[in-house]
Length: 126
Image (cartoon, rainbow, N blue to C red):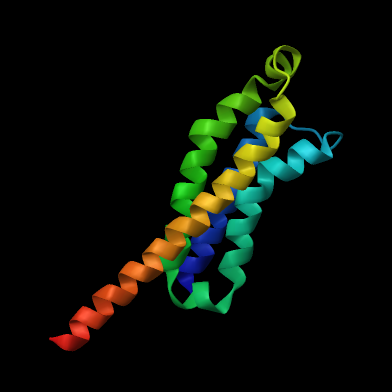
């Protein structure tokens, strides 16, 4: 249980640093919600009993999701005013990045579960 509380604290800290770093305001609720989507998904999954019993599942979801978020979406958000002015697809990009980050997290979690099952079946055979 201690690992889960450390995980939640780290995710909340990352969430706060992201909001402060981007200087997001509550007057931009859509931007705020989509920016926080991967973080909130990770926090909500940590409340699930399946994730609480096996902390490796949380890492399998969170790490790829947040890495994609920080390397793809965060730099885009920092220059969002310039991007909105110069690009006709900026709104689609804005919606695309957080959703893709969550999908990447779920896909990596599925791969983790598949590999865990394969390894446990191999261990039972021996």
